[in-house]
Amino acid sequence: PHLTDIFDDVDPIPSTFCLKSRSVVSEDFSGGYPSDEKWHGYINNNDRVLLKTIHYSSPTSAGAECIDPSCTWVEQWVHRAGPREKIYFKPEDVKAAIVTCGGLCPGLNDVIRQIVITLEIYGVKKIIGIPFGYRGFFKEGIHEMQLSRKVVQNIHLAGGSLLGVSRGGPNVSDIVSNMEERGINMLFVLGGNGTHAGANAIHNECRKRRMKVAVVGVPKTIDNDILLMDKTFGFDTAVEEAQRAINSAYIEAHSAYHGIGIVKLMGRSSGFIAMHASLASGQVDVCLIPEVPFRLHGPHGVLNYLKFLLETKGSAVVCVAEGAGQNFLEKTNATDPSGNIILGDIGVHIQQESKKYFKEIGLPADVKYIDPTYMIRACRANAADGILCAVLGQNAVHGAFAGYGGITVGICNTHYVYLPIPEVISYPKEVDPNSRMWHRCLTSTGQPDFV
Ligand code: ATP
Ligand code: MG
Figure (tube, rainbow, N blue to C red):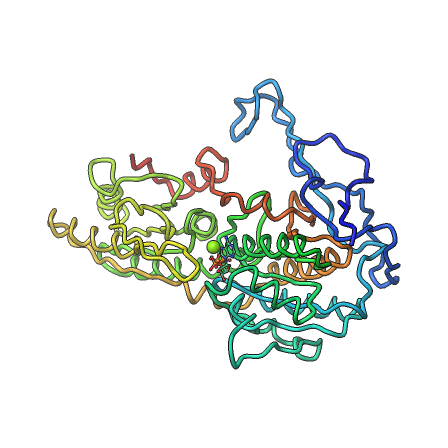
């Protein structure tokens, strides 16, 4: 088979970012099979979505990110997602597989459901689920799951993943050989950065073997830490659930004499959940995130500020992201089966240090710690995430049918787009301590700098 780049024949648009060199279709696109009138209109292959459309009048404007001070326009574009008039695969030749990897995230079932339903509308008959992540390609005694609209109809009413998830597992070459044996030519991969690194490796291995397989990712990160995307599914739900935990911490702290409530939220390297939940709840006095260093002890430390809050307000609520303040904790070098470093528990540490501190200074304090992580992750997606999942699921299938491979779907600058996987996983998106959003969060909590 002849391998060509899908974007060879489109007009180049001046850009600092484009898919051209990276996103690949396995064969000449022009001879594609016409797609039926099922989608109420098609997306033109030349459609572009601008990633940034803000015009900063000066580089010193608050929150401006000027690459060079003489350039106040930042223009980057990506391809618009959606159904194409010509499709690359004949629906009757498709065997599609779906796999979910990593940790749980609200909305996984919504995405699985929408992928299956959209595949069926295209006319695909062979749809399978790979159980328990990449391990499921080989797991003995566990067989692939046959999927249809009937099977997935109501799965979005519950959290979790119908297919199950796992970490670690087989190497990429074995996975691709297994896909070859099973005759899989569309693979939908739902997972985080690790899963996407795997998906990209699978895509490259398929290309190397000249297999005509569309590997399409749907980014699953409750932390919202994927580059370029406005938000990822599950994030909204997580923030909403996190607020409940914060509210409980507030009530506990407020009802106790000198009460302190500490809530630890997800966010290994990015504090988006902690920041947004703090902003949304309006009940947080101190928000601590991995991107912003802080001290616990000393006149400018968190503990001294908690003392001030107890003396002035009578109670305090601390919201801390799990990756914050890791420098205070002993490094263990322990990793999970996927190779991710297991973090120390910063919530427990702050609780212990506060108890010690207030005992030492002889000020009574009632410190309570809440870790709602698994309750948040296992939730059913809320309405906003339900919509996001539905659109991402549909677009994943449209992308695969259009012949895109090694891509992931997302929402950028309010539009739905296809992005090359390596562009979005090179490093995690982080809260910019100079951004307006972080400044708004600080305004809302009223906290000082802890350095
Ligand atoms: P989460 O956000 O929940 O951590 P994740 O996708 O990052 O999601 P991981 O457990 O890190 O979760 O990885 C999921 C799967 O991807 C695992 O099966 C792991 O073996 C595989 N994987 C991780 N990194 C790579 C890589 N660089 N190449 C190939 N496969 C990988
Ligand atoms: Mg990860």
